[in-house]
Each structure stands twice: as C-alpha cells, then as structure tokens.
Length: 282
Image 1 (tube, helix red, strand yellow):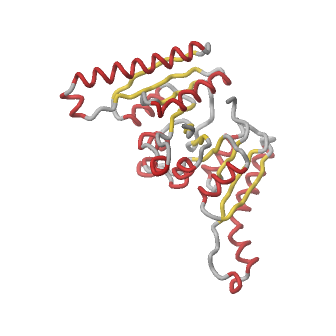
Image 2 (image 1 turned 180 degrees about the vertical axis):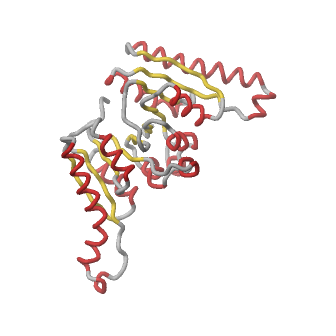
Image 3 (image 1 turned 60 degrees about the vertical axis):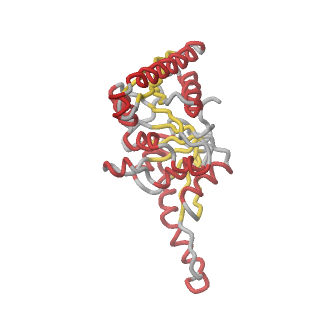
C-alpha cells in the first residue's frame, strides 16, 4: 500500500473540521470526497411541507459545502461535495466504503481536559465501524511526514500500525520511532521487580525487531521504551521530539471492542500535539 490517494473528509461546519479539510489537501488534491450529514426528518412531511422541511435541514450542509468549495479552489484542489441524511458516523462510513476511499480525515473538537479525554462520539464511532484508516487532526496541528512515531504495546494487535508506519516512511522518506510504554500497576512496579524486568525485556526485544525490519528496508528506525501512564508518555514524547505524526491501532478487532476502542488510543487522540493516524486494519 502506497501513499493515500482517495480521501474522505468529514465536515460538520466547525472551524476544526475546515482546518482538517485544508490540511487534507497536503495529502491529496485529487477529488477529495467532502461529506456533511443532515439530520433525518421523522415528522409528517404532508403537514409540514416536504420541500420546505428538506431544504431547511440541508441548509447547514449546503453552507458548509459552499465554503469547502471555496477552500478547495484556493488550494487548486478538486472535491466531491456530498450531503447525506442520517447519523453522522453512518454517513461518513457509508460514503467511504461506497467511494472506495482509503483514508478518512476528521478534526478533533474540544480544548478542555474532559473533552480531550472523552473522544467525540462521531470520531469514536467512525473508527469503530470503518475498516479504513482514520487520520484525526487537532486544531492548529499540521500534517507532516518527516518524523513518525508508531505506538506499540508489543502485541499482535499493534502489527498493522507498525507495518503502516514503515510503509509511510518508505513513501515519504520519514524517520520512524517505535515507542512502547511499560504501564504497570503501581503494586506490580513496587512489589514484583521480576515481572517488571520480564516486561522490559519483552518491550526491548519488540522495538529491536521493528528496528531490524526498518533497516532491511533502508529506513532510519529507532526504538524507545518508556515508563509511566501510556497515553501521557506517548503524547509527552511526541511533543518533546516534535513528531509530525503518531500512528497507532484501534486496539479492537470486532464488535464492541472496535466501537469502544482502547482507552490509550482514545486519550492519545485527545491529547496529541500532532495528527494521529488510527490503523483499523487487522
């Protein structure tokens, strides 16, 4: 799999979503699908007047898509504007599948601690229901490929994210840092040093294996084992090292696990200083 070429951007009319759209043009300017979702009307259309109700419900979509067109023209990009009725995550996922999009781009809403910690329901559900990769862009963050951090928990569930990070590095000439975090309970850290040593050895072996994979591809890859709260260690390291992109898995394969995601992934998205690419392939 090479660079992303077929993008879908979810637009809700917020400045955050328009920022995500502008940044998406750095990835591709070729017929980016821009989706807005209008609520479904479940009342009696015969009483309210069919055309009037539908037009009113579509009005925010049409306004957002008109601005999206202006932004695209300013960037010399081509977009395919789409307004669908229904639930936002269903509309985004359906259009991504119907249009064979290979990347969904969303903005992060909310600046408060609670808002950052509790990921928006639309973003969470899109990640939970789609089998496309999802790029989530924080407000004011810019897309870049020079320095990629891939977060791994040393499990098979992290393999798709590691593979995708190496693929991107090949395409963009990026430097890759594979980070794993020893996030043991306080009791385990204080009372079971043997367990801690075993986990440390396993983490070190894992990052070393990823480094060897990168070297075989002539990539510059380094491995880092951190200690502490996983999401905080990852985001702090990304900020200190000025990473351009964090790549990680959804940490859920099917059903409820996919919908709920992993708490680490969710919190990294909310607190990251840079865009986060969630690899949903398993």
